[in-house]
Image (tube, rainbow, N blue to C red; front, side):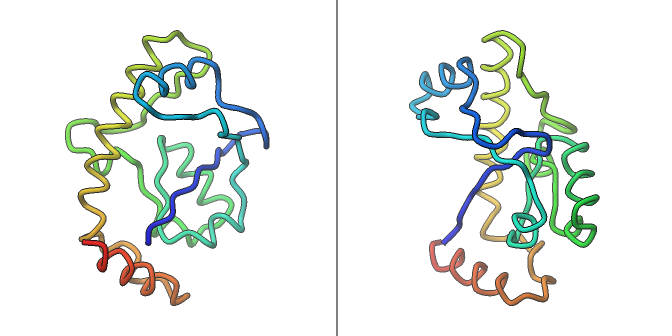
Length: 141
């Protein structure tokens, strides 16, 4: 089983998604009405087998909070192919920027999900959690 969760490096806990994010997501049959922001913290990082960030500053924040986590923290675009670098955050911008961000995220996440079965990044984690998750992910193939 693969669990996915979200947290922000500068988020305020408990806020809903922006109205434009909700609107663009709805156009793509995604319901963000129950989404609430959450601030990234040490516990979330330590409990993760893999951390994917939208930008290099987010990755740096992970390293500041838990330096050892940089070994299993990657940019989403590392898995994307055609897109490289940071994915711009559309907050405060218009619907067109939200739609473009959606398109980039969708393409990158699709490629990431295709690669998850062969991803080797979590094998070096000493906690034992990784082996179980790897076995669970392999059983879903």
